[in-house]
Length: 204
Length: 302
Image (cartoon, rainbow over all chains, first blue to last red; front, side, top):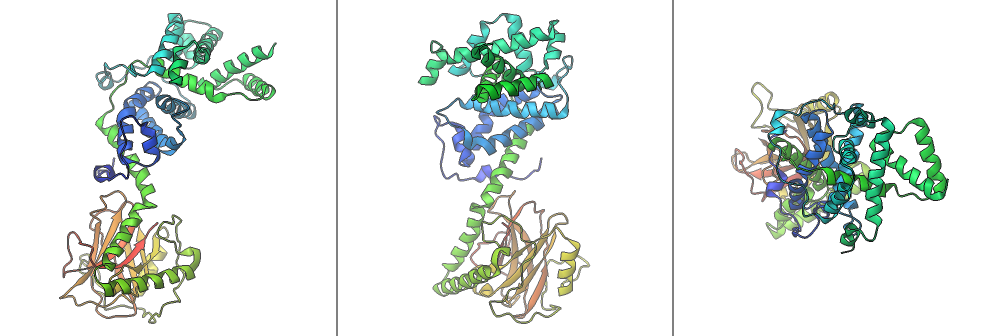
């Protein structure tokens, strides 16, 4: 880190954001207050995603910085009429994390202990309990058998390969692939299903 | 296999593909199905995975202060560089405008100087960039529009007040060339009038090497000053610093008008992202913070 002062401290944004406005819209127009709000809002989420899909906390920190740079670059592509801001952020974060994992040809070892300093920082706050879209997705996935939920979680959250999940759960590789695929497709189908609360939420 | 079956298989492969690389056979199957079925919404699959990720991610963890500071610094650089394209240069313009408004005579002189400078810039073509241009300028061509006194090879009339101990207080023309030759990555930008009468006909360049934090200024037609009354002071706007407090680049005198004068730069602080070089007229000895009321010359980096 360079110990210089931040532009933000003395910035006089041309426009200010309103609480109801998606923060990425403010970021897209270079609103410094919006940038700060974006960091405030999404850093914990991105950090949580990155730390679980990275080899070390240092690696995760690099990933977080890269993801935020992607956000600055691509914020102008976010369209609030098309989808959720949080999902948009998550898509960008996942792309970057997967790219890093593949680029470095490594996976987070199943047995690797988490650093104690970070374990102690685990927050008790739940993610997005008030986010209708995510809550509905959670409800849909919760209808799956628990082992299936675990397989999906290991794949998405921990970033484990299908092979690693097979070892972890003691399943055949083909079963792992099938379970994850079907779980995701079920979610996708229910999102499209007009009876889904999620669809209703999107129509609001 | 029906189309529905094929579509389902394509979706399955698309999901796996986003989670880890497919095998060669699977990749070929994915490509074939995608070609056969026509439009396929990969984005829907990716969005679903992202949504599922959010759904199963149960806790958000606070980031450390260090990481947050790093992210803020990155943002600072990212948007600061963007600002280089607009507001930083606008700040330099404000300097000029403020100087122009100091007096009606000054305004007209400044306007004339700006017109001359503009003509010079136009005449020079694309090698000399306008305020918001971003491309590097390797070497400005020689100015041939405004009247120029043939430059002498040496300039003994320049007396930097902040020369380093043991260093020469007078930089000669050959040092300018030597500096450019020995610092191939140094940036070099043309001076333009800043609005004050002292720089109404100023020309020349500033050269700055970021790695060594050294540089020189070459002036032509910067009006001489009386050191007991006023002196010139260089300011360097750094993209990583508060723009209200540019880096002090040193105080210097020009004791005779005309000719070519070479002045070494003595930045008091490290300059990380030089955006604008500006020469002001200040009280003897210089000032800590300039009121920016008299700007003799300005050189935009981008």
